[in-house]
Image (tube, one colour):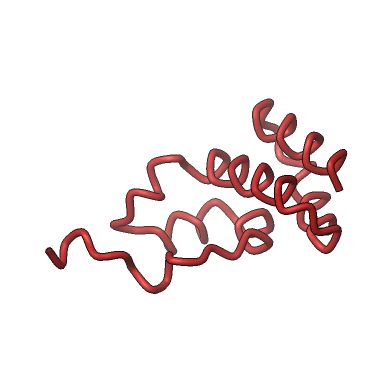
Length: 85
């Protein structure tokens, strides 16, 4: 069914972009997608966890960019991921 087919724009998410993008940019990119349900900070939290699990130090810049966002769950995930890298 076409309604449930994956969007080519969302098949591989750019974790760096998610951590650096504005709330408005995130909402605009995922209009009509179930990914949007997590909200910008929920999506950022998930991206931080994924970066920590991947273990690539190239993600440190994006994680540091997200450190200033005032959201306890996001802050915990970012600190955890930085510690892993």
